[in-house]
Image 1: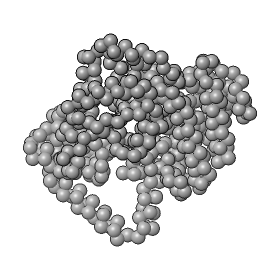
Image 2: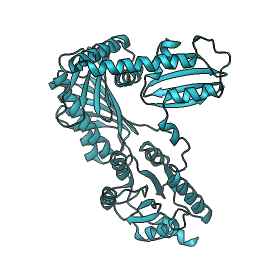
Image 3: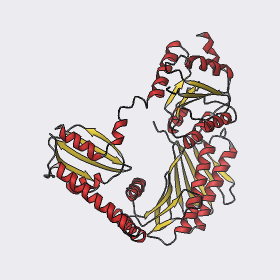
Image 4: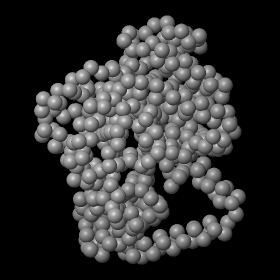
Length: 356
Length: 96
């Protein structure tokens, strides 16, 4: 039997909760609906069982909707969130969207509005089930390229991995060019194919694109696959020490190429050991990174300012960027002459390239 | 739908984002502020304390920061070190 989606409605007024429940029971997918009159109970319910959608009011005593949403975003990233409010204020709409809500809806005052809301909600509930790209996830980039060439297509693939971007041009089923991060042609093609994950989109064909690849796609795919197999078998055979050394050399080279002075990474787990490249002071710097990470998160929650994306800091000698990510926090140092506006993007790119 | 007029019920207020600047001395006292007086003072003190502590922790780690800017999804906090205290700028940011 197909399981029903669960919706949790949070509003401090029990009369509204009853109304919502009645309205939502009209949804074609017949979701299971639970309610809560305060943020703390809503959190407990979300912890206890998986919900698909949270519908949240904004104005509530003790813990308001924005506070709830900022916690929910961090603790339940898969949960779809909807704000249903009577507050007509652009600031709160912006802040709700900054917290990653899927839908911001003013409390409906007409039957027509209510109907539209129900339609949006139904679409939100079923979005994954209708996702036509799911099958693609089981295909590698090589498979997709082969399919495009076999069907004699003309297209441009734009492939993104973190802040790395690559493009592959196909014309009438022929691979004609590739480009990524300073490389072009076969070298770029090989580099893109080494990315283990990412996203891609197809862009309109560019028939005027100058050809830089003359080998057939099958020959190139075969060469790339062989090279990747060789790297993989070499990696299996080499000692952990050699592998680490190779990684360190590669990372130092990437750092120098980008112009960074040093990088410190700190795993997010409590007793994670920091690693430093280009500096011997990683332990000292990591103490500040650890403190800053916690302090800024605390401050963001108290001010209801949403998650933090980065800190840019300067001292007399250099400029630095502190970047949080899922598994680790990174501090990247740049010369004091570096352009302040660009160092966040450059730091993100550098850190992403290390992990690819 | 007359029933829905119930939406006009009185409700507790939502907290706005702070906007403006403040000067803090080395003890964490707020010396001057252009942030609206309706913004909760205790939250401004929280900001001031955290900023001074971030500078202090950086000094302990031999980073000696003279300025930093924290980018939240909807607020930017810029802090400049000033004789042990700090000047803090709070600017709401709209993602739209």
